[in-house]
Image 1 (spheres, rainbow, N blue to C red):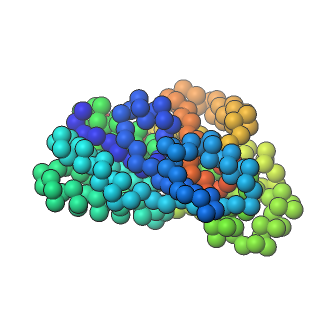
Image 2 (cartoon, helix red, strand yellow):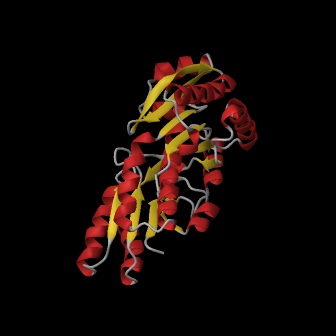
Image 3 (spheres, rainbow, N blue to C red):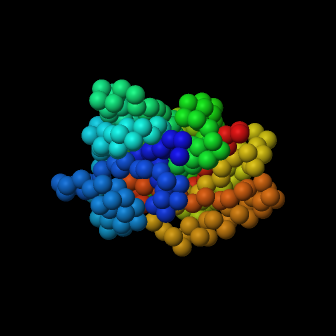
Length: 298
């Protein structure tokens, strides 16, 4: 292994995929009300977390970023073994996780001055961050050195796009994204928000009447983007975001496959990510959508 890849749990990579890729995850913390913080993916699984949200309507969980010590403990193990490290963190605009990692790097270099630790702002969130981590693993597997891999990853960050919707306006209101009046009216009219991630931020992409229609519109918006930008999907990673409702997601996946049937030969694999706590606290337990990220050129 030329270098070890580390990420925070905001990357939302499934546990079995993390093990397969030999990636190390530094978890965020999540809590409800006055309860103690739990490590995401360690003390509480993603599905369990969403079920707690669904069962405790009206309560809004909180997340806390990994500490400096959380990162330092991981970095030190590899510094002792002289293994270079690439740490890929959630978009700095969304969390201070990268600052914890940077401070930990400084701390470790004081004791191990020859350690190689690169801390990288993914400039991405949730499954896009996970896709970037997977690309880092692909570059490592192709034999690239640490700094070569970082340079190639930096070239594709801005290509990340997500088209998604959620079922719960209350979480967006609690997070300051929309006002109380808009939430009340939206709930009465069964309005569902359409949201996109681009240029390192979340932006409103309109609204839709009803859940089924909002899900369909995420697919239509993704398709329109691919066509307008003349995207060759063989050059992209193609992922789907899943929340709590697995049965609904199965139908959504089939809708996506049907919409992109004429490009099936371009899509190497449809990746599935269970959106975790870091984003879930803002969307509620039912975020669903499509993500695209360009592959690195080898």
